[in-house]
Length: 462
Image 1 (spheres, rainbow, N blue to C red):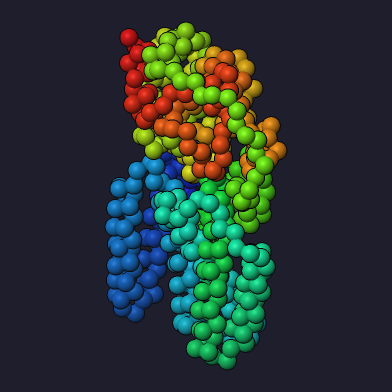
Image 2 (image 1 turned 30 degrees about the horizontal axis):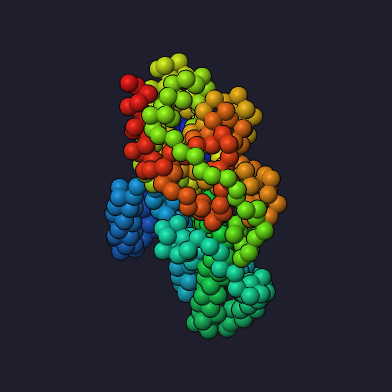
């Protein structure tokens, strides 16, 4: 009954997290479900344990995990949230590997028939393989998001053949593992499974380009769920199976939604990535960049009736979200209509910009997704692009030689005036130059995004 209640709470959590205004309640439901699951585990161990050893072990492990989780969550900035999520996924993958190896060496149940032993061996093998792929893939994603590794894809010669060879090797070792006469004889094959699957996971993520990282984080979320479900089968734990399936399925659905938003398939993301071609035939950017001062931009804003703000990762890096919220209030106080346009892959994490704006107190009802606001740009007086690049690149629509050609973008260039706030003229995370910056109706406001927006707030209010 406790497992059933915890499962319902997890489902309620996912339902709450699907909307900004119910996300807080969704978080509470998820925490309550996890607290209940842990409490039931402790009580079960206490009842069935012959000593206090298992409970003490659980208390030590749980306490250490709580300390690590608290320190990480308190120290992380919003710009580092994608890295934290990737790191947490790696923990789930590593746990699945350790659970599989432990269950192989010391099964929780006595398997009385060969069929049951074979089925349990398959569960262990799959759990270790999926966990290892999740563990190393998440570590590579963490390093790419942190900047320790380059965002450019690593494209080894015959990489697809290497992946196929690794998959074939996993199947071959599985046969040897299942036919091993003793657990000790099968252990080397199980460790080999973990090592080879780990190499495969690292190679898969290394081959993915930087602009696909939001989808990669979502995919790794899905992998972590399936790894947890596999551990549930190994441990015969219904709640772990249900929870893993919920996370795995929701992560898969989110990945599909984001891939559709980029006009790509999941297989295309997993085995390739933006910037996958070394040399492109992208059209050369022509024209000159035209700048505006903060005072001039503020004058345009005061004269506007409709303003759309497009946030990007640069806004997160500059910690400008609260200044943007102040600018929004100042403009709305003057009777100017202000809305936000959110691209599905803006930032480094699904929903990254939504979280930033919610943190700053921007009203939910003026934050709109790409498909709902794209048709409004032709009637918009001023569009402010704050730290965004690839998601507003017109080359995605009119340059077949561009690496991001075919990706739906926010059509900000259709506004009467588009003002781009950037530090400089560097390319975006996908490494693609943006012809938007030299268009006739585009003006640049160079500098730190927070300082620029603070200057706009003061000028608009004066």
